[in-house]
Image (cartoon, rainbow, N blue to C red; front, top):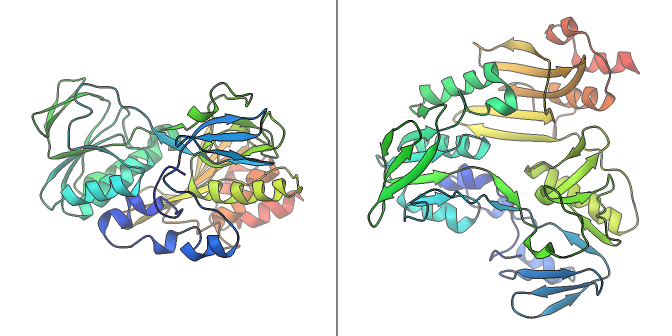
Amino acid sequence: GAEPGIPFGRPPLSKTYLRGDEDLKAWYVKPAEWYGNHDVELRTGSTVRQVDTALKQLRLESGATVDYDKLVLCTGGRNRHFAVPGATLPGVYQLRTVAECEAIRQVAQPGARAVVVGMGFIGAEVAASLRQMGLEVTAVLPGAAPLATVLGNEVAAVLAAIHRENGVHLVTNDQVIGFEGGTWVERVLTAKGAQLACDLVVVGVGIAPAVDALAGSAIALNNGILVNARCQTSVPDVFAAGDVANLLHPVFGRVRVEHFNNAEKQGRAVARAVLGNLQAYEYIYSFWSDQYEHILEYVGFARSWERIVLRGSYDSRKFLALYLAQGILQAAFGLNRGGDPELDADAELRACQDLIRGRIRLSEDALADDLVDLRSLNRAAL
C-alpha cells in the first residue's frame, strides 16, 4: 500500500484519534509481528503503477514487478479533488490518512475558527470533534441539513438541531466557491456571497474509487471495479473488495459501499473465494457514527424510499427510522436506539437486517408499534 505503517482501520481519524482520546493500536488490522510470522510480505509506502492481467504482473512506481497467481484489489478510494480557487492554500485540509489527521490536530487549538466543507458522515464527525476540542466551527453544506440525501429531511433535521445545539453554525443550501489568504487560508467564499473568516478548513466532499493503476487493463470499471456477487472481476483470478468494489449484490443490486464494516467483511469473503469457496456475498450493510454523545447506526441500503416509519419519536432523540419501498424494508437508521447489529443478536437493528434480507411486505402499523418485537415479523414470514 501507498501509506507508511501497518494497515489500520480509519474510523478513529475523524473521531477519537483526531481528538487525542485514542491511539491507533486497537485499530491495527494485525499486530506488526503477525505479518512476518505468517509469511506475509508487507510492502508499505509502495504504489502499484500498472496491472498487467495478461502477464499476471504488477508494476510498481519503484520499477519493481510482482507476479501473481491470484490478485485481490483493495485499493479503496482517494479524496475527491476540490477544484476551487485557493484549494491548495496552507490550512486547507482533507482527511483520509494519519498524516492528514495529525496535521489538522496540530493547528486545531481551542478558540481557533474552523470551517468544515460538506456534512456527510465524515464532515459531521469532524465538525463534532472540533467542537469537542474547543474550536469555533462553521459548516457549509449544499442541502438543508446534514445527510439529508441519505436519511431524508425529517431525520436530517434532528441531526442539524443536534449540531446547532452543540455550537456548530450551519450554512445550508450553499456551496464553497473558493478560499482566500496569503501564506495561510483566511477566508472561505460561498456561492451566496458569504465570506467566512477562518484559521483552518477541513474539506469532506467524499472519495473517488482508486483505480488509476487499472487504466488500460482488461478489468471492467464503472464507478469502481465491477464485480459479480462472488467478488470476481471481469478477469479470471482477479477479485476486488472494499470501497473500490462495485458489487452486484443479491439484495440491493449493483452497489458500491464506502464503510468500514463492509470492507472488513468483504475482504474476508474474497479470501475465502481465492481459496475456492465461491459464495455470493450477501452481507446486509451496516455502519455507525459517533457525534457528541449520540450514537448513529444504519443498516441496509436505500437509494430511494416511499415511506419512513418511525419507532420512538424525533423529540426524544431516541428512535428508529425505517425506510420502505412497496412495503419492503430497504434500510433502517437508529439514533441512540437499535443496538449494535454486529455484536448483539437481539438488537432491533439486527432484526431489521433479517427483514431487509427477507424482502417481505410489512405492516406499517406493526413496524411503528413499540410493543411489537421486530424479530416476530421475520418469524411470521417464515
